[in-house]
Image (tube, rainbow over all chains, first blue to last red; front, side, top):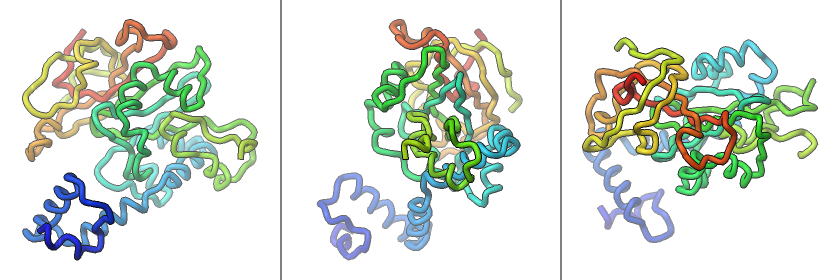
Length: 207
Length: 94
């Protein structure tokens, strides 16, 4: 299969790494054996690439303006997210947790890089780094400080280590001074990092 | 499977390293926490990792541990918590 490789449209420009060879070989075998078609693989990649933090931001903005929606989201996130016409991909079970004046959640996967990809897309590189994964569970306040987030001592910091089927979505606090803003404008304030819990949502003044 | 624990129950994480893949990090093994919530029944990753069907499904819990109990030198606040998803077969009453 090596000799075929450079005929393929997805071939990288750089020399292939060991992992890329392996993925290439597995993919070729799956196609050869009729388990998957090239188009099915392409579609799955396309679907994954289409998932963006903006989808999560829409969910958070709705939760900020609609308390009943938020209550349903906290009880059954996947079903509630579908009310917005968003289909959470893959098999993951999304669990939403809410940050408040008293409680702050931050998410990690110490074992690998579990992340709500079916809603937010790919995780940032730092989320997969050994540094973040090993330190945020031991010294969360220091790590959050390095991200620029200083939490008051009376806040309860809750670090979620997602070791199993649950993919955690943090609902950041609604910033002050956003009363009367439209849901669409509110969604612009919700960043990827605020939904992982290493930052607060933007305040309108900062934008 | 019917769940053995309910929210609020104190549980201890079993200590072990079964051959193959398991998803209970060593840093939490032997620690005592409290059940935060029952997620429901999920396939066992120790079987799924090797092409098994992961059945029977097993109860999966979110368990809460005080940070100050996990790390002797924890420098954060006393109320800080670590929460982790743990399968029932890794838990025993405490």
